[in-house]
Image (cartoon, rainbow, N blue to C red; front, side, top):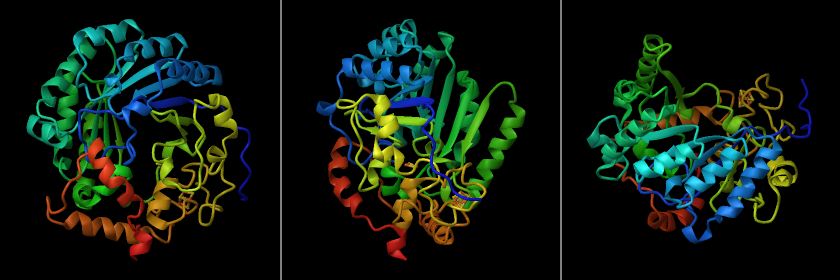
Amino acid sequence: MNAHAPSPPAPPMGLLVELTHRCPLGCPYCSNPLALERPGAELDGETWKRVFSEAAALGALHVHLSGGEPTARRDIAELTRHASRCGLYTNLITSGIGVSEKLFAQLVEDGLDHAQLSFQGADKETNDRLGHYAGSWERKRAFAAMVTKAGLPLTINAVIHRANLSQVAAFVDLAVELGARRLEVAHTQYYGWALANRAALMPPKKEVDESIAVVEEARTRLKGELVIDMVIPDYYARYPKPCAGGWGRIAINVSPSGKVLPCHAAETIPGLEFWNVRDHPLSDIWRDNPAFKAFRGTEWMLEPCRSCERREIDWGGCRCQALALTGDARNADPACHKSPHHARIAALAAAEAQEEAGAAAIRWRSLKTAVALAPRARSTPDVAAQA
Ligand code: SF4
Ligand code: FES
């Protein structure tokens, strides 16, 4: 089979907007970039509304209102109303902190369709410690009650790593107790903050396998009651995930300051210029920004992806991870067993997972640590360089 050139892009399915990087929590696996954007750089409400109108006109179906903590924006209800009026399905991705009953009622009135609530642990102590916020457990539970009382579908989002891996069964119980319709058990993906904290977060493979078995049993037992999605750790995978659904294929991310990205970590790839919604209509960016075209389709692929039968299934995996771990964003994601780097990252994961828990200091996510970490992270040696 030959690789072929990309055809003109179909419309994106969805838009993930990081409305702000402000957040009360300090999760050490945060998917935001290490170089967090400052509040003063955020787009104003009118520009966000234009972006939503342009996304709907482009053919997008849903918008994920994310952050940071999206409800830290004072105009969150107004933005939700506008997105809803544009015909977009609105999903609020939140920590649940700081959402009063009054604000939530307003969001519902303004057309909010779905809420996705994060928990850092399945009990109070673990949750508050790993979210780095005392008292968040009660607030999250109160938020979940507001969602179900309003009759909105609730998804519980649990990011899993070494410090909470033993709680997968408890997360399932928690989701059922809170009346969630869906639970996302997502093993940490190692970019940004999680990559900086990898040695503290990497779980042992045996325990990962046990957690997969727990999820499979729960899926069977709770069929029709709770949908459980699971993301397994890349470093222990056989094939990579189709990151972002394939670069520039179905998803758009917009940063707080309006940079339009194919995925949340795209700015880690040097040499790409990401256009801004302040300067360009979204449709032009989607179609013409060279950064979106850089890894769209399959023409850019090297071997083994180029001739692989799965190249239009996983799209070669994750470009950002390929760069971070092999030094070249065009390489196969080393999560793939066909990658020449695969054995090395599996060995690295096994070595890090064996380190004594607590041996590696956790860097809690915050605007302050972002300043200290961002320049260092850019020069952190990757696995290829360490080999
Ligand atoms: Fe996917 Fe490339 Fe691996 Fe094939 S070789 S499975 S396309 S990452
Ligand atoms: Fe960028 Fe996967 S996070 S392609």
